[in-house]
Length: 586
Image (tube, rainbow, N blue to C red; front, top):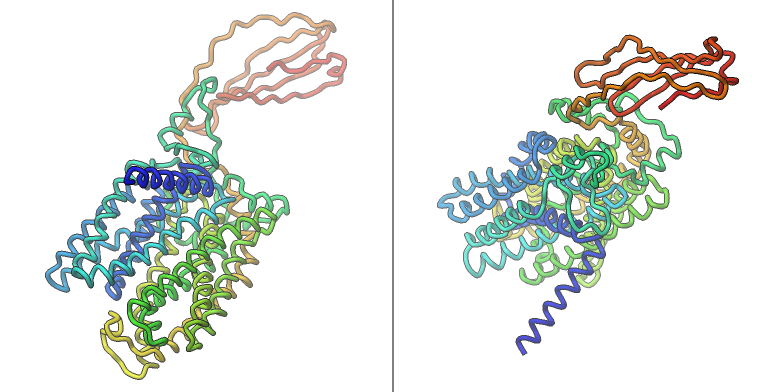
């Protein structure tokens, strides 16, 4: 019996694994999605399990994000993730062993490392590993990990702490952190920047930056295929194709013609904020996470007091509502990509905006009703709207940015997002005490004694205003500016950094007179003065003049410029050229 159950379990696991591979597009894609989703899950599980103390790590993460974003654009991103995850795990162990509140508070500073690292590295790796046409759908899968992590955090902080001790709620989360760091180190090689490691549907392996560099150095006659440069990281997505077909003009002042990798951090911040649509996306994304952070902190208290249910029932109901958010991120990412494939180039900001507006419209009756049967489905689909806004917006930000700025661009967004996430529990709690029937001091934030259902009712209703504003900004503003900003990014020249090519010696040629053709013409070559252009990193250029004659009368003068690997020809025609029928030799 036991052997039969083992075989049935193995068969079921294989079927699930094969189905997931088919859905996401292959084993390599599945591996990357799972690892990046786990990074976000680890961060969100910590936020859900700590309550008010999360403000400290989130605030530290907001401060540290900009320099981490600069490192993301310059150094090995997988090593950066491994290091941050290990630091996070060690800090969780120390948190569980804390002997004072001050010690616990100090460990939160180290926990800010994963807060600062997760956003920039996940965005940059997603852009380099997945084609633009599928990024909305891929982001939906990755952000599912963030929501699952939130649910795990609630279970760990509640059940584990109740059964064992609050210390174990830290230690339980430290173990998967170590496992995740090992898995990233073993399974996720650093990809080449600019899209040359992009995973196509059905790929089994991830091509590392080292492998791509080796292929680029391989001889042209070798078996290796030299990858095509793709500095935009775009994979020529449908948005860019439609922008070019419709001849949408770029903002010429913002078109980059140099590699931005070595640009200063403050230059990058100014450039990122100069992009019109990006400013809107940063603001609306931060407003969405602000509402989500407050909801995450006080949802159990609200459900318990509003509907008169027990703490355990409220926790389970919150997990069910969280499933609605997962449904939202999976649906909207796919919907945005589907609309783009049908030439709706503003689909991503449109879908994000409508998701926010749908959430606000459904939260309103869900917060006002006193019937749990009526409120549950309304809150379920409202959560789908809040979560569903993120995948298309995250994909849209990559559409408008050079691949060498993805880390710093995401860092700029994370600063505002983390800042609003940090103050959300404080602000929600303060407003609820102003409207509630009583005040409970610090207990209001820990959940030991709620501030009263009526206070949270009014608070959540007031906080629907930022969601509504976010939706309107996307639908009315971002849709208008998005096409030109994508056109600006698509107009960027090939600015990928490359080492100077090694000099290729030209073999000496023996000059031989060319035989006369049927018209009696002969070609005589006489090299002119060679010239080198542009400095040490420019290919050598040599000018050669060649003349042709018919019966000793010159009829054609040809100019040839030879560079390393290519030849360009110029010909000046004279009156007898047609009669000679000559063409320059290659």
